[in-house]
Length: 280
Image (tube, rainbow, N blue to C red; front, side, top):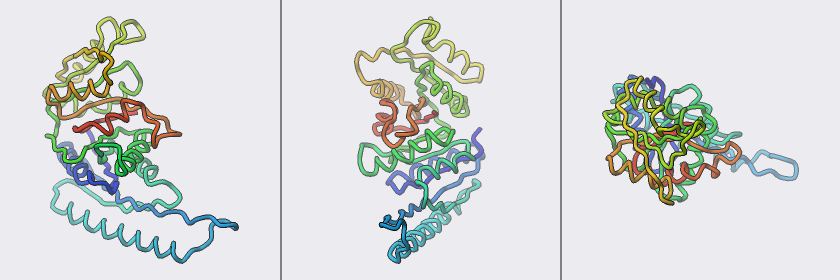
């Protein structure tokens, strides 16, 4: 069960959809929801004698803080009518990046829900930065909600992409509350490698048996990519079964988290039109 859920407000067009999904999850799991209004305070420009006081920067900080407080007031009013436990925090980022502070706050939660952005754009850069920070630094799963996306909670049909890796094992474990509540879960294995250190003689059988012991209604699907992108294979299968969610292992590197995400991870982040649950 998810008992603590966090939503960082990224300032992108998908924030409202992420918040709505988080509220639905909080209601379904009787969880506490924390919404974080992120205020990015830029550092002063360094001069010959280091960082110097700047009246214009002080004025800018005041404006950003006032705007942040106004946004908090709007969020609190939005949440007044909800029946779940909620709080809104104003998080100021001065000597640290907003995405890193969001990841720190997510340490104390079970799940982070953030807005996704379709397409590699300016908004996509913001979403990717938050996603990368949360995925690599929070130690918690991240659920990305694309714009204009509304799915039932709990999701009825889920596609869970399996590879015998630490990231996938982590994702399947973290997603168990959702997988167990689904009507149908397809464990999708693409281009399996048989053998003791691969997918086994029956690809997907071992992880399916493990999920079944947790009460998951699971089917194993094996597909060949035929030189198509893995992300496309996953999304095509999800569309065919009319899935409400995709569960994957998220790959990235902390030093380059803003851009050097694994190929499939990056492609899904910008192309998926359904919620994607990632763990690292």
